[in-house]
Image 1 (cartoon, rainbow, N blue to C red):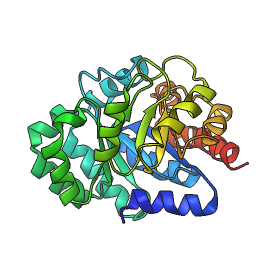
Image 2 (cartoon, one colour):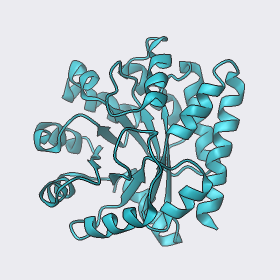
Image 3 (cartoon, rainbow, N blue to C red):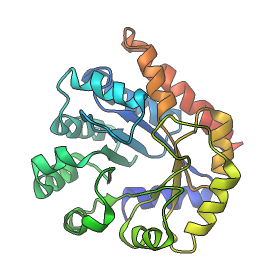
Length: 267
């Protein structure tokens, strides 16, 4: 069983939901990332999505686009991100790490080499935003052979036939995009999310994580009542942006947001 599956099984047994923060690797500097990851875990994160900086993050709004720009100013590459995961693993052998990003850096490295290096570093899952599941057979085979989960997005507009296909080909968890638009966009409607998740569960028993629109402890708690996992990104990356000149405050202040969400979700 993968670290991701183990995490969800443990949480289910405890009657709790997964809290899954997203941060961009190398933002605002590579030296910050590993300490931040440990801080997130200490604050209550169950799984971490680690963004791989990319020059054209088309599915992301301005907040994460700027995070990618800050990371790329330090030439943070995919191999550098894997080095960060390996460094994190020296102290944390348990918390799942999911790389979230775009296909181009992986294709440059090559699927096989990427899988080899990711497995060696301690990566548990990959969410490649711009790789359609219908075109991912080779990618899936190589990732699965290395014990790496492939995670896919489902949108409010995704039709049933495609939902079924995604459910059959995804693993680890499915990422439900709670609002139409890019990351950091409009507020969510929890009842609409609940209705959609109920529909998706007709096709799968894979855990369902919900992201986009979760901005505070209250929205995290509300989503946790209907989802298996709560994914939060832009509010954390915004806080990092506020602290680009005070690196020592990034881990404690970003972790404080996650701690508040964890408390609300468990209450």
